[in-house]
Length: 85
Image 1 (cartoon, rainbow, N blue to C red):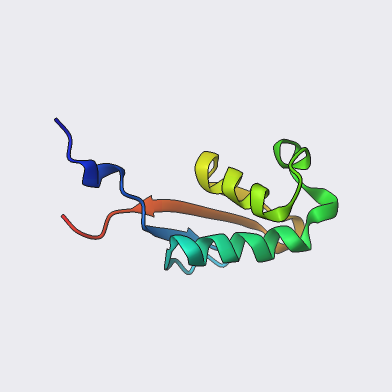
Image 2 (tube, rainbow, N blue to C red; image 1 turned 45 degrees about the vertical axis):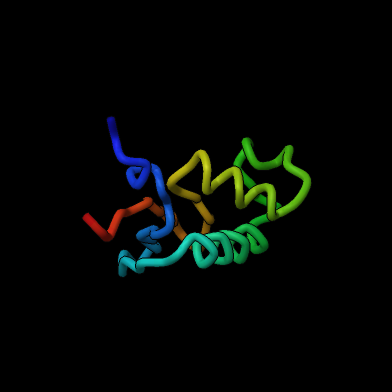
């Protein structure tokens, strides 16, 4: 039986367009996505357009995606990582 720790998501690696990876916590990832989404509200991906506000858009991205195309700001990617064995 797998350990419940396998499903605990608290650290992410973020790959911005310049490809300098950063390790962030979930609240830091959410803030980063919030800031990116605030800049591209006029050009949102189709699956985010029907959500009422940026906070809902952020939660959708964290739970269902691993990248966001921000047009001129490039493609941002993030992945959950486990730092402890």
